[in-house]
Length: 336
Image (tube, rainbow, N blue to C red; front, side):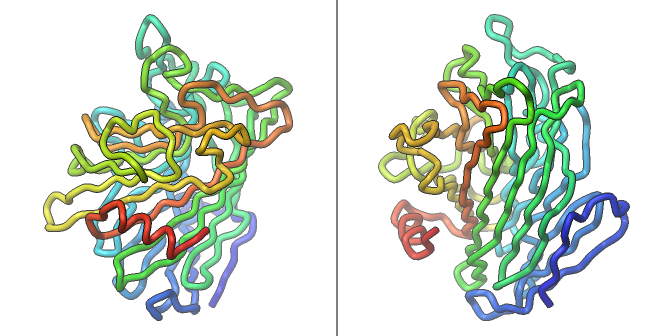
């Protein structure tokens, strides 16, 4: 069975659709099992192991946390959780999500807003949201998943500022090697009659705090984790440019490690060659684990009326402690 859901919206919160792909994955097992609880979430399970790989939650949550869809929990193929949700230090950190910390004077990140010279202030009138409208496609195929979503971006006042088409693909699910991958693509179109200005705390005066865009918050156990890039290692990678960055941690409660690899698609301009807005990594392992391929670390990105901003990323989830050669080998064997 290879079901698809077109423009699934407004069906009520308790209507559940189950999708199962019959095409085998790389290890020859059955396809992924997808459960869509309308108005709430989509869950994706690998049937051979029985592990729920992730839950994509799109219901609206607390207004001050800048409600937006997110993935949590995200798990390895051994069942270990590699995301955090509403930690007590930052309640608006929710697994893996697309954010915009500073957007033309609004905060689509959540929580307090950074104001130069005054620090972080509770300014609820600046906190906006990203709203799910519909799924254009939700399909299990070729041992993986395709989820395409239509969203709208709003300031606190509720006006339409942007429309987003988001595509999440799950591919290369391999229980034998304990690895699976997700490709996250986004296309954000400015629907205002003036430019949208993407920024970060760093563009507004705070040094080395350029977080914005796709953001991962790791579990508490991953504090002090290992950070790798092609030619460097450690927290000094904050603000640096590289085609990929890997974060490795050790689980609490059970033995074992996990490594998450965050990779720019070639067209993202990670080399800063002028072909696109240069991307820089936001990464921390203290006081918490976090990674973001920032949209606007040092410099604002301006999006003209009617123009679109496109980015594509791959996130690899491995149930192992990987070295640099392991990451490079995986990416070489699994090209874009």
